[in-house]
Length: 438
Image (cartoon, rainbow, N blue to C red; front, side):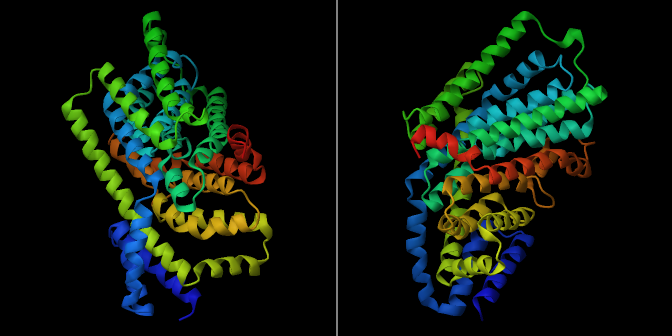
């Protein structure tokens, strides 16, 4: 069997395993072992111990449980609910103010957590009912929560960024800094879209009545809660940018400060610590099993010549360097409709990044393009699991079809940002160059 048919057979087996509901990590590793046994014999299993050891002992991976623990604590600390209440007080008087506030608060939560679940589920639980109660357009309210919640993948500390850096040996600090301008562009476009839409159609986002806009004391409390959030963000991202800490050390400090915040809001005790630790253990174990399975599969693909096949295919298509990058993005967009974002990073990063680097592109730039792509993947039907996160916490009368329809304008904005960053690499590479002299 030729390499091209072998690649197609492996990819088809992956889709079949996912469709049957098999565990992702075990499916990827099992498929690699099955095809390795069929074509190389039992000696192919010699690859597994070294792959597992190398993939799980990378120092960067220590950041994953630390960031996950920080997120788990914050979900139980009450800070998220306090921040949404602050938005209710400070921005509710503006047309579309609650929806704009959702984008801003979710971006702050993303900068403290690194995964999308916290932002989507907190906003869906705390912010969606008030917006619907006050007559917000349902699609606008749902779309704002989906758009804001998804920022957890793009805004550091991002778990997919950690995985990309671990797989490709790219500087994680540069990845974190390189994502800031694209994230800023995306947040700005989200806010502008909501503001313009509610200016043209005020009924889509009516301002709060005077009696619900809060007292002076409420506003002071709101500003205090915002200050707490910025302190935590500085503990993580600020210390990295100033060279005071590595990403792993920043994750440890962030976890400690999250516990202090939870104590301040009087929502932290032994039960909360136990639940946060168990949640961290489960999510970290899931990430590690996916990492092991995907790494075994990726190594098998590289050994059988899949990398050379992909590179040769792009050369034969005659697309040129930027056309090749665009084709890679299209492939990942299609994969995002069916496959978990962790799998896309772990399978595509080892295949595509060396090709991009060989063509003279910056690996940090390419990595952020991949993360921007995942921003779209997590909200693209039929698989985008962020859609199901929101459905799980939304009021019962919110249908899945409404959630699907709500994402259209925001996914379009994400595609625009992806194209901007692809055509103007400095949007990604400028800040790492300033901060790290890269």
